[in-house]
Image (cartoon, rainbow, N blue to C red; front, top):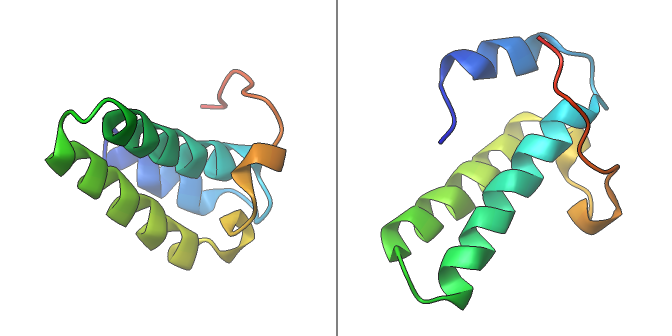
Amino acid sequence: MMRTGRLKTLDARSPGNDSRTQMVALLESGARTAEAHRVLPHLAAWCRSTAALLRRRWPDTDIDTAAAAPYTWRER
């Protein structure tokens, strides 16, 4: 899953950076997949709660992630 050191990098990026939105979308997608297949309920809950926490931390990611730009190779 997500390495905590990555948060520092994403925090340093400017608001509206696509990589923040992509991180939230990835976590929400993982939760939906686990729920749809009725597997790993603890992972699904963790993904949902982490995505919610990140949406609060980064208000610019509180958008409909279905409308987000497609994945692009991440910045370092």
